[in-house]
Length: 259
Length: 302
Ligand SMILES: Cc1cc2nc3c(=O)[nH]c(=O)nc-3n(C[C@H](O)[C@H](O)[C@H](O)COP(=O)(O)OP(=O)(O)OC[C@H]3O[C@@H](n4cnc5c(N)ncnc54)[C@H](O)[C@@H]3O)c2cc1C
Ligand code: FES
Image 1 (cartoon, chains in turn green, purple):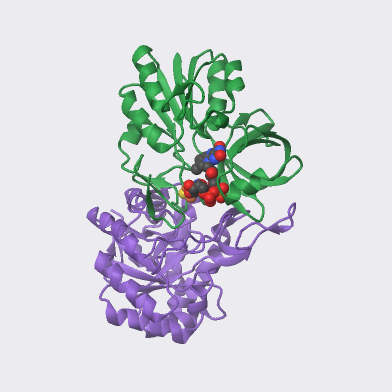
Image 2 (cartoon, rainbow over the protein chains, first blue to last red; image 1 turned 90 degrees about the vertical axis):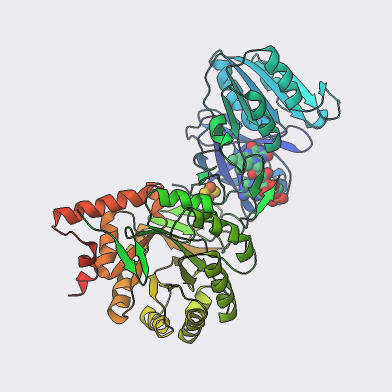
């Protein structure tokens, strides 16, 4: 039933000064790219992608950006949160050589997809784009999957100095990728889609969510596509036909907010 | 050929399934999708004068036999909503503009704007079970219901429907008040005020604590209300509350409804529930030798 199930945080890990991972028991089957609605009792309920997938244990990895995520950040091992889901469609992981592009916290939800691709012997290249090297996390996790890792920082504090998309442009002209999977700031994903031309493309979108199950229309884009049901992962063909993509999102009132 | 067209005041509909307010109706794209999925008309999200974020999450929880929600009337405000209505108007989707206010001035201002933007009819939401100062607080006073309805009628020339709650001691009295105010139709019922408590956390699940219950569980309440209203007023009734199958829709129609609205049904059967329900109704009618839906309206009153 789509009601919060109360779970105890079984493990808490600090990834960097603003990012934490929580693990909890949640035996439902999930695929990379799907998400939960996480209830922080007395505060809020927010969408959060799965960042670790094991049979009985799942994890989320999040950055503190506001009231709900700050309150979540203050919780730790043994604290209770409400969980419902899994929601959304998730990534389709196939092909021979995948380029992953993660911007900021988007790296978190790509991790299970990278791991699954690794298990399927798909050749992996990852671009991790952050503002500053202190924001990096999951580098070791990606190394373990045998991925070729490229890092871009806006300030040049590590790796390539510049945007992840510039780095992607370079790699795309050198190598033949069978698909590109991305999660990050929408402006970044939009530029990346323009670069991808005929290469199969999948991007995970974020929209303000309330019900999470496809009835309130809070998260809809284009002609009634529900990011919580038909998304959050959309392919390039669909995204090229959605006027909202990379242009605007809606706040909790339904007003359009330009990116 | 089975004829399932219906008419509510001057509103002619290709079938009796209408999208209920609050479901998939915050933007033109979503409402267009629902129309393409077979609904004959859509009711917009309830719109007020100013933008409202609604209540914090959790705003939704599924219960054993229905859905509990306390969205808190989130909406972008009437001026911002103009763009959505105009866009939908271009696709020729019959639209019922739902509005809420705390007094007749607000309802009149909203009605005029909605009419001006191009909606085909109005639905006055006087029954939201969980928004302070709005909804049920206006809709439980017959004098206020009559005043608001008649003021809106005086200042507009499209059909005006009044949406009522079942959380009333006497729903017929309020329906009559709306009829006295010259309403063109009654919509019944809105969701039923309810609560869910989580045992582990020992606290209500919804951030607003209480919310509105909808879905299968409330259908018998809706049927009773529609039956009583239809018996006591002469204007058309639109039935809402737990319509999930063609047989549910027919039950409302036999109770006296000229059409039904579908909301939580979208959750249970997907966005194409409208087509499914129409097909099921046609099937039933064929098996029972009916050719026109209008023959079935109110038959349970004999
Ligand atoms: C499908 C999906 C998956 C996500 N996965 C992750 C993840 O794995 N890790 C992570 O760190 N973040 C993730 N997010 C973003 C996360 O939900 C927001 O950071 C969080 O809701 C912020 O809440 P706040 O109160 O801390 O911040 P606020 O100050 O309230 O807002 C900060 C930003 O978060 C957005 N936000 C607030 N509430 C919601 C809501 N109910 N739904 C969507 N956005 C909201 C606001 O619009 C604003 O842009 C995901 C979002 C979506 C839609
Ligand atoms: S969050 Fe309600 S429809 Fe997606």
